[in-house]
Length: 144
Image (cartoon, rainbow, N blue to C red; front, side, top):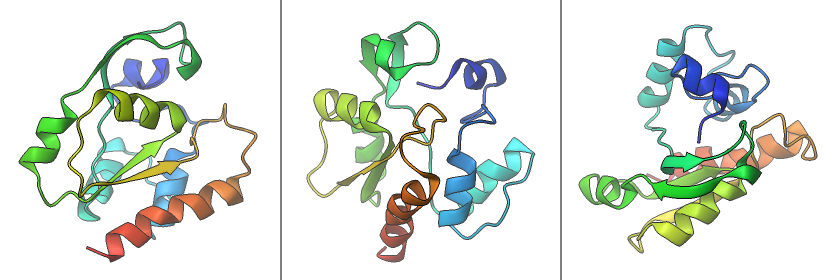
């Protein structure tokens, strides 16, 4: 689920302390992310990358994934069936992949890619290591 800041702004990864935009722009060769959210989304689409939340609904206190309860996943099975060209699903953090794997029926041709969370709360993973692991996105796009 998006952070409280992202929900308030109606933007993915709106918290300036979250490293998502820096990571994805580095991975996709985009330089410095623009400040305008629309430009960020247009960049992702131009690279063949889409964003969607694993969860449609949950309850939690604050923005911590650790406090997530009462989950209802988005209908990702229908999304994947509607777009058979999708071959990879990457997850920003362990909790997203864990919930997805438990709740979503996945076509066998889809490869899952766990990534270290871009959240500032994941301070235990150095940025260099995060970027190295996030490069799996570039590799996946190069195989299509």
